[in-house]
Length: 229
Image (cartoon, rainbow, N blue to C red):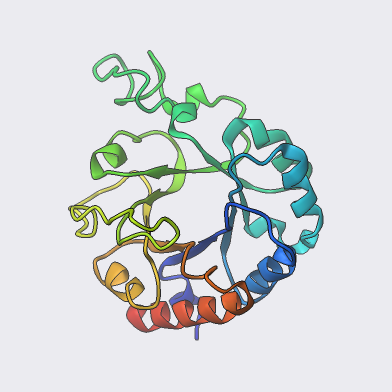
């Protein structure tokens, strides 16, 4: 398995929304197995709770971590040397202003660009979207990538069906990489990659049994490598 093949697409893992015993050990196992991006997403958790989890993860893994929560966690990310923050669209200016023709892209803060609206941001940024139209509105946001969902029927949210218009990727170009999320497992990830997506994010399937999370990650990585050949 060469570095070029592994780097063909991005494979990200998102944590369960709740904390569980032995979680840090599971997360470190994924990182040791080669996981490039581990998204720490704990809706409703306070900064202290997030810091408690970070303290249990060895410093050598921090470059591969992504904190969900936007500006409110910038100080925590800075203290722990975490390079990437996953932001709500509202913090990027998307949907607040429609200033096309006024010197800035559609959706950018009024009279300027997204990056002017995020002045002082020292982090790599990513965000979550739910339509291809939204992707076209983030020009100039300076994002490394976005999650697009739900591509397949959600596993973590039973009854949350796939959006059938998402899977087939429209012709680009795009302002950043687009990563598929929702219902990604060993049976669906190959189709996602063959449709030309830049990568996949996994949540529900990999955490159905935390004790085998590393094994499931390795299965997905093997499938991705084969599809990149």
